Amino acid sequence: MKVSLYKIETKQFGRMDIDGDKVYTMPDGMPGFSGMKRFAIIEREEIWPFHSYQSLDDPTLVFYIMDPYLFKSDYTVDMEQVAREAGWEGDPAGDIRLYVIVNTSAGVPERITANLIGPIVVHTKRLEAIQLVLHNSLYSHQHRIFSGENGGGGADSRRAVSA
Image (cartoon, rainbow, N blue to C red):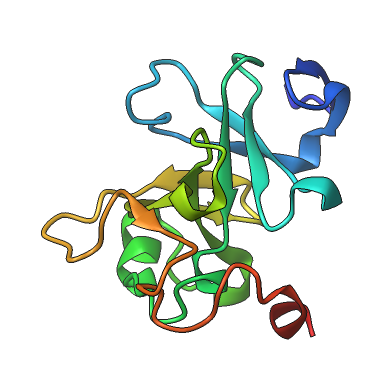
């Protein structure tokens, strides 16, 4: 049975109603978090360019995610291979979005890092998501997003990205 509205209490935003059409299922769950399969992407102006990847299975579990191209324009993932492996082959590329998990716990912008070897890929029409593990990658799981190692772009270049 599909739920049309989820009511959850989040740590950051308090009580929220999440539309069932905005809930993504991770068929294999979130690696390292047994039983965590349902998540919502919460986009709020006050935390932009970050989004909350909020678990609906455990409201205390939330990850911060963001579009990697905002700070690393040359980031590459073989999305055709991802689509094949996820069973999304033939679906429009515009239905598939890529995010990376961000560690903001340091509280100092220069120390904010992104996990480039474990991106989250979501299919906006199928409402499915997977976390990849990029083996033998030159990317880091602690890539600083406000540094000179970004390959163009920049997390603080909001106007250029949204125009």
